[in-house]
Image: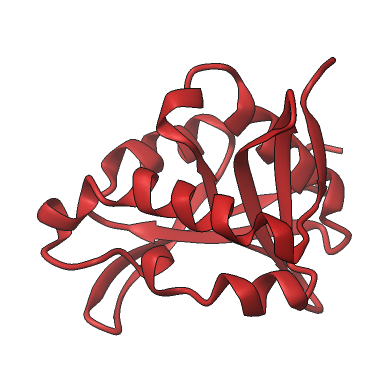
Length: 150
């Protein structure tokens, strides 16, 4: 069976938190503190119906947190378990995100120290809009205009 992307339930929270820990812990030393996604309340995000998980063979391998705004969709977080990276799950979650965007644009931000993410999102058509220091974190803001690509 191919991977399935579905709305997260409270039963997925432990798996989501484990993926967050595994995916973001390596950045603690580089950033000098826990990255923003490690501080999020995933129970609140799931109950607000903002989270979708990618499941394959009965196991959650990744997830995406999407927040709809009037003029854009915020890609708040996307993570794939380190053991499942390289299988195309991140690409599937990004494609899913584009299908969910009703507003014509997707915005996201990532930590300046996560240079791999900036390169990845640039390759996927995202353009840097600005940088800002927020909550002690150096963030790079990016946007993809979907009206140009659809």
